[in-house]
Image (cartoon, rainbow, N blue to C red):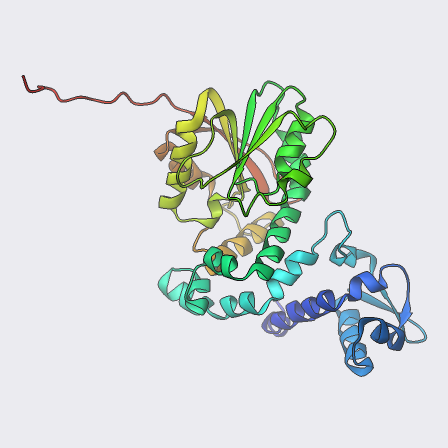
Length: 346
């Protein structure tokens, strides 16, 4: 256990944030450059940039090539904007001053059980993003990148071949729905999210063979969701407390066809904490306490939540695409009949 490195972990985040914001990874991706030439290209102070580069060498992000040239390390390629599993937007989100302040309020979040973001900013994350469009762009791009990584694995892990209508609830730019429709040529899809969430969806879904197979509907999943026989809810439930989740799930229950399936695409918190998957889920769980007041849940917690909304959990996939994300597969239970009064008035 290296307590010193842990205590200075915040410095690593800011070193990466500064490097990505200044454009260092993209500038060094094609080959080694001397520090002074790189400083000129990035409009930086040569001494300041050299000191940042040395720190990046120590972290293993950049390699030094004598004499005094620097090149991006192979393992750091995801920091580039054009990498297929780019982390660029995620680093920009984590290092942003607004995010920084929220993590600084973690003590209050733990003390009260409420989201630290609200303590730091006096408002919730999503309301804050609505008032700060620049950060909202970064946030949405980070979320889209995460979905793009795992979407093909979702399409492989569940058999969509018999699906008639697939509804992606809170589906953002449509990356997950596009992967599913590619894998299931007979299916049609509905992308459902807020108007802000679907702003780039047409571009994402502009693929050969998809043009006549999808619709985009806007609204709030707290009010209602479109009908379908397969409903997907990815990265939504961990944002919210149980009561809000029940609202979403009950709306899904009202919209799902008899015999359909609900796919909840989320990490599942394991019982043991001594695995790489557990570490990822636990760190995501504490992040939910900071950002939204949501949580990562265990399988029994999901079973209880789904049962309360009228679903039965019938299966959970292994982790997808080298991540902690899994698919929880649920089917609707028969609706309880509405009971009238035993002795109706005459």
